[in-house]
Image (cartoon, rainbow, N blue to C red; front, side, top):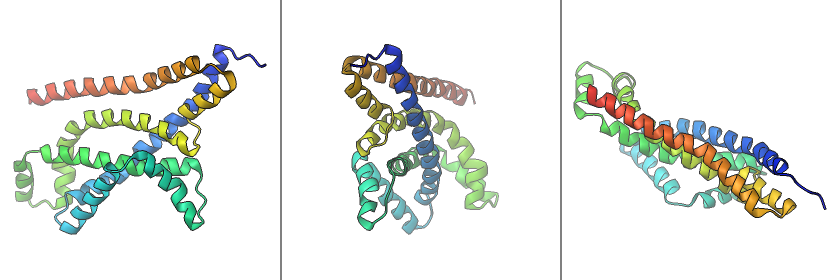
Amino acid sequence: MIEFTLWDILRNLLLATRWTILLSLVSFIGGGAVGLGLLFLRISKRKAFRTLAKYYIELFQGTPLLMQLFIAFFGLGLFGIDVPAWLAAGLALTLWSAAFLAEIWRGCVEAVARGQWEASASLGMGRLQQMRYVILPQALRVAIPPTVGFSVQIVKGTALTSIIGFVELSKAGTVVTNATFQPFTVYGLVALIYFALCWPLSKSSQILERKLNVAHRNH
């Protein structure tokens, strides 16, 4: 029987952690890009665009991420499209993240005083110019803390991708446990690694919230 040292276990888990980090980054950046588009649709003057974005957000917020992963992985397979686990995981997490980020950012845009819209309109600015030069710079200050806070949810969400075979930290924990028969040690280390990834993000969100609120009060 092969003996595994603590370092052997930790090294294998750390190697899998890189995929957790990479998937989180891809989902956050991709979700941010799609979410920004959804934000513009959500606050559009055209009702059809607002309705389209609203239904998208309600669909992805109202269904479990696990189901979305299954559909991304197995659903396309029904049409003869072979989807690798990493692609299905990235796609599902990106679309899921976009729905939440769009709603977070919509709240931040709506937190900007109505007078700012009216003042910029009185200067002859178009909708895009209003957003670019007046609204988004102010909304960004409000949006940073909850956006950083939501990134913690994305990191945790990557754990679900193990169900479709993507080998990230959780999946690696299961594989290493099956090889070493040391579930307490392995999953204890997995929990510590997730904590090391998520805690700095949570703390950063709290610090940013305090700093930006103080700066806002001083203006």
